[in-house]
Length: 65
Image (tube, rainbow, N blue to C red; front, side, top):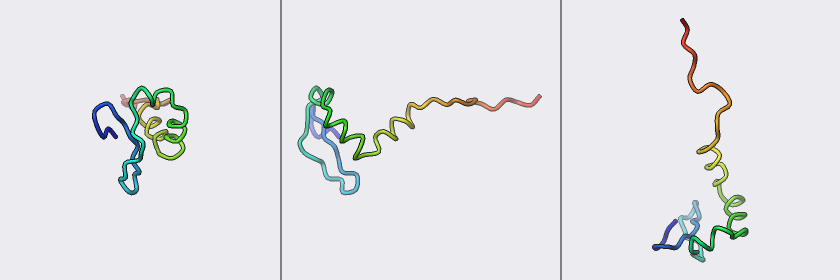
């Protein structure tokens, strides 16, 4: 979530509570604890996988001629 311009915060999906502390984008990029928490405490990894996973099968079914 972006509580104010230039700042980001995580949100508890169950309660809607904005977690503290808010962080600047530059502080998030190399913040190992932030990303470890993001992947272990949320469904973010599942979201990324669903958004960018490539199919190994046919995209369209072949037409019978």
